[in-house]
Image 1 (cartoon, one colour):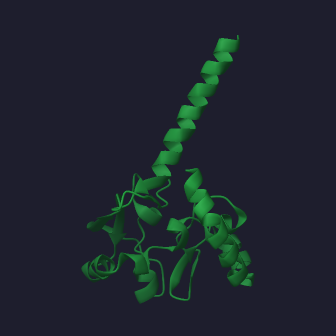
Image 2 (image 1 turned 90 degrees about the vertical axis):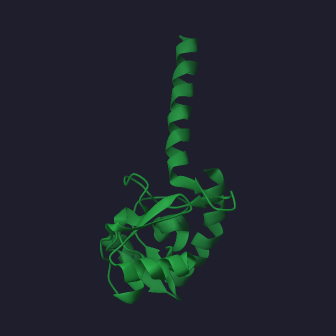
Length: 159
């Protein structure tokens, strides 16, 4: 019975390790870069165009024909122009906290996002779990950003 429990524990640990590895991809420097690709087969922010939030002021679904792979993650864009803007300066357009819910990161955990729950503050894109969480986020964004900035390195290091 004890061996069965140990074996079950090892299986659970292996599943958690594989799941965590899918959240974090190596960057060009070999360091860990946490980009949210939850449920998307390696595509960032559910296939939405990160540049469109800045240029259009709204989320737009990207198209597979306008794809860039950056740090091992696929990014889709709504147009060739947006793709070119991203290629010229990806760090400008990559969402804060790798596209995980900014409110969740402020509370110490990594969770999914809905692309239509977003805001731009001080030139940075912040995504949220859903519209209700976005409303909470909007009440004290500076406080949540400060908390998330403190939590983010530890969340990346854990995974």
